Image (cartoon, rainbow, N blue to C red; front, side, top):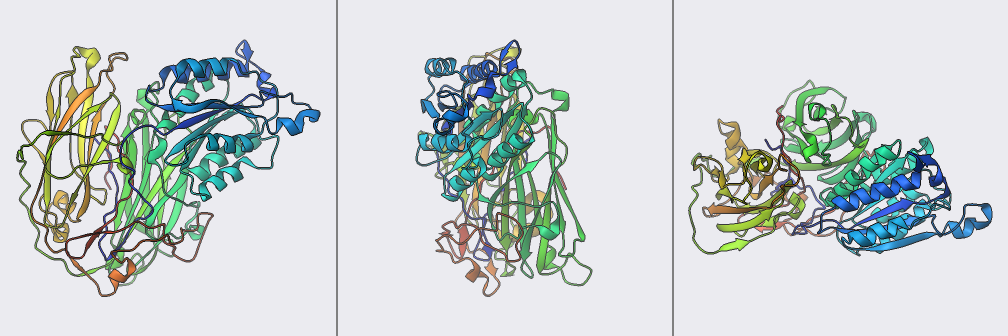
Length: 613
């Protein structure tokens, strides 16, 4: 099954998760590998030196990297000695050996083979140089490997990482500590944390050879994680108070993180935490299980008895856990806490973890605040949208590797794409109040046969607030197959605010207009090596005429004008705050009468076990 996904669609009475822009298209984030070639890398390891092990690790990644990826290589410490007389030169000794460009396996391998470990450790300077070598815009990643702390600071590596983020550079740093002490581990962890990246320990060369290809492979796809930086705390009393927005933090294994949100009287708070797990092909399947949980507390720390969890076995397939709470306590009256307007605290916990994962992973937070309504609009509907063949030619599309990059489908029609084994791809279609959608996915045979070609396929439909509307999964054996099976379709009823009062949980999820997301997955084959691409054809119907939406309480629309642009201040990313602060803004798009939508980012994964509150 797919895990839950969260995005926020917001009407004039809703303050949105802000700061998200859909870049469109698919691809890999340009990535620079930064390798430590300081003198300490001459230490012995596995019959050679640590430098020898690092070279083998880079070669391992180069051999397995996707041919379409953009990869560069930089080193520090290779051009000078490490005595005091050479310190000034050594602290400027950063060399870009391979500019980031389309993967050139021979050039990268040749460049790393020629590296000699000799000098100082200008880690902060190397971060600046690597960032400068990457493209000027768009998502970018750096993977930095070091066996010690920066011996040239200032600049402190974490300060450089923080400066880059404050300058608006869309950059994520993943760091690996190669047999490091606590001081170096703190520096490397900090760089990852302030940019929303990962940190991993490699105790020896054998571990580095396993970890570097994994981390670098994940970095190429890491552009899904984004948001205004925020730092949750380990206690609710010191938690940062965030307005509606789209935020980015990191979370450690078995760690709790707290965040505050102010709820208006009669309103609803949507709070979602998203964690994407790297693909780790050699994890023990029996232990490959992770859990993320959410709880809600009132201003006095009282447990509001709201508990949601998302859990997945086979996390190493690259799943995303999405835990979401739709908190309606502000609609209730009376005493006793957890009722009425006020401040509420949301606790996110990465509870159960599997071995072999990084110690910290990015955590995206999506926060929406919805005001009460005086008129919900038309009555609930219960008739599913029918899938009809609108005719016309097939339209080629390229699905995005995350909801942030989801390809837009322009209404009813036939859309074709080609998925590589192990890929999740995303498309979006906008449904206004009164409209409904239906679709089917046809997976075309690719010539594979036998057990070695078998993989799992899946599709899921998600509403704008992250609720799973429908899903289906089956086995692909290289022959034609459709999802859903048996001629069924994935479908919504006409979208109406009043659907949230329906008798079934599914219909209650079809109560907000905006972007609906279609996810398609082709799993890796049972046997490595038979990794043939799979053509897919998506047939979509968007039916119904737009109709008036709900009327929000007087004054609520003033919180989010429909034509609002600009960049209000972000929430206090450094720590606690007593004032709600908005995230950076989106442009709100008017839809029909009084409807406006905003989208925040998430990712999606396959899970054998799924969450339920």
